[in-house]
Length: 506
Image 1 (tube, helix red, strand yellow):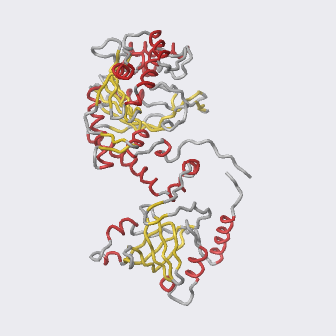
Image 2 (cartoon, rainbow, N blue to C red):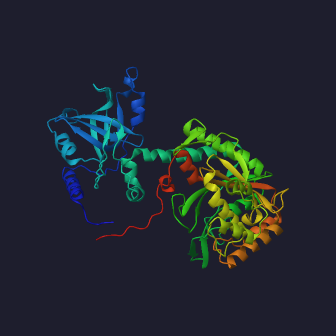
């Protein structure tokens, strides 16, 4: 990040000084009485309604100016969109003093500056709804010029696409690429749709700790920190699962949380170290019930965002119409490799991985090997929503044993467009079984698996009080937004994705 000012930045500071000399505060404090927004004006104004638009006040950023001497057309961008305004010298300067138009508007204001205007709405000879300005107020002087983006007939021809600029200076990206804002508006609609659905069905939204003494609920590498007052090491949460289950023990029937999680792992197009997961837990339910609820929820989200269950993702059309396909993890591997691995031990699985040229290492137990096999051979082929069900017990230390299939657990992962979107269980509520599973995770950690789980003794104590039969799920909100908004990278659905710090150049 350079601390040197460009020529344009120096000129803008000089203009700011000139405004000050004229007694114009470029950053005024008083409330500005906005009455309308751009898109509502354009949608609502016509010959029948024009009397309703005789006294309109809007505020926004100057995005372009067309100078015609004693009058100008300009385009203002507010939080909703853009509106053309017509500024005539004698209208905003009715007296002898024409400084506001001749000096302030034409010479001291720039693209990117924020102004407020009052006037009436009319239609130009070319048929464009515009605001005829009668009063103009300087609200903010922009000291850094925006990148120039060429537009014609509402189409952008050279939008700024440099990821370094877009992700590091998201504030500028949102200004010059308005379509980017639409992704984040849809993200909020998606989250609100989920909230509405869960609340309608009796779920209760709760908050659980972000700083934890034991990073539980998932197999992942945590971020570590230190609590000075308590003088103990702490971890940023990798999941909120064990706390939500404690609430089920405590008597809540259905709880959910939009959880900001942190995992000290790799970064790529589908992974960010800080991410959002929705988790919910419901007493007296199982994973079959959870599959039904999940597919109904995703169907509702697709309709809320697109008006249809068909969603375009790249060159594919993905249907979120319930019900979704269901396939066991072993069936998926066999379907894509021709090999039945369901009865193999650890050595047999290693042999199959070697046969298929899948890299594995000595720290991997049976569960990790099966996970690698599925990930390398089958995951990418699950394009339409597919529930991959009935995982081996070694892969799922928090999941209840299958009611009828030895060695398996009642778990599903929802795969869409080749990626995991959700992970759900019939939750393990046997405290003795849970302790043994945790102890198996410790053995994996001793073998070098730094993602293996810690033992959470307080959670075991909670289970000993008795947790009713429960089903739980985690849904990756960022990946779901990627799918529902047709974005190829997780960075495109995070307002401020993780980036390496900028170097300061003096």
